[in-house]
Every structure is written in structure tokens, then in C-alpha cells.
Image 1 (tube, rainbow, N blue to C red):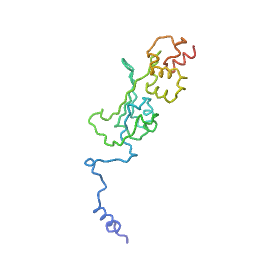
Image 2 (tube, rainbow, N blue to C red):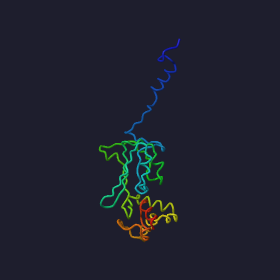
Image 3 (tube, rainbow, N blue to C red):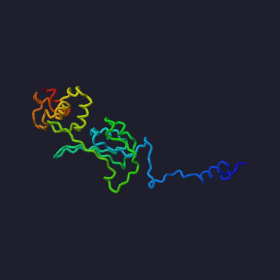
Image 4 (cartoon, one colour):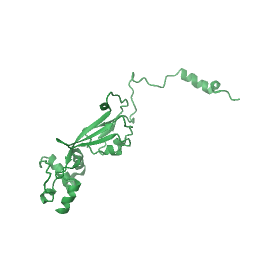
Length: 203
């Protein structure tokens, strides 16, 4: 006859071993806890490496990253806001970041805060507007990154070429809305794809 689990030798051995062994739990927060290197904790934006492309928002399965384009009076900005109270720390934003360092997963696992701003990760980037219609083209850091990656090939695209020349101080920036985009001299300007197509077909 099979004995009850309480009287089985195997169960008694485990019970006595657990009675005289150390606990499996940690002493956090009294003793700091160090996660493993592969731990996926709180994601952090890098102000220097983020190019404001918004890829992280596109691939986020939890839809916790908002891309806010502010093009009112003053300098137009693109603001990326990640809501950590919705984030599932999957690491897709880091995996698909074009620069590989624009957003990184950290070892921070204790998300503590007392207001909504404590659970937000933000980064702001300057926007580049079309010189004819005023539409949003991309973040300036994104265009600069493309110029650096393409090298001499960037000069095949007038928008990238003008962005590069303005960084060198050769061409003065300016928003020229209302100017006839069909003029041949306006072909070398910063244009959105729609205006670029119209000027290319008419010139």
C-alpha cells in the first residue's frame, strides 16, 4: 500500500533540507539586487544617438510610444514619449532602432513614481519642414544620419544635399512658402515628397 505523501521518505528529506537551508528569496530592497546582463528593464532614450525617426513607436507591440509633432509658432519639434506604465519591456524598440543606440534597455526594474511624469521617457528632436507647403519632412537628426550613412550618394537627393550644405553653413536656411515651386531654381531646395514630385514633373 502506498503511504500518504506526508510519510514518504522523499518528501521528508526535502522538508528537512528546506528547513535547514538558506531562503531562496532576496533581501531587496535592504540589499541591492543586481540583475543579469541580459535582463530587459526600463528602456532609456539617448539624447545624442536618437534620430527621432519614430521606428520604436512603429514596432512597439504594446503601443506605448507616442510620436507628437509640434509645428506651431516657434521651432517645430518631434517629441517621442514612452509610457512606462504600459511598456512590457519586450526590447523591440532597441532591436529595431536604426542607430542601435537611440534607445537601450537598462537593468532598472523598479518603476517607482508618484505622478504620471515619473512613468514617461521623453526625447525631443528638431523637425525639418518643406520650404514650399510647410509640411513635415523628418527630424533634422534623421536627415543628418542619412547623409552620414550615404556619404556621396546623399548628394543625389536635393533635400539631403541642402541639409548637408546648411550644416556646413554654405546655404542659409529659410521657409519659403508660397514661392512658385515650378521655377527651375527652386528645384534645389528642401521639399516634401509631394512638392518634389510636382516640381520634378513641371521643370
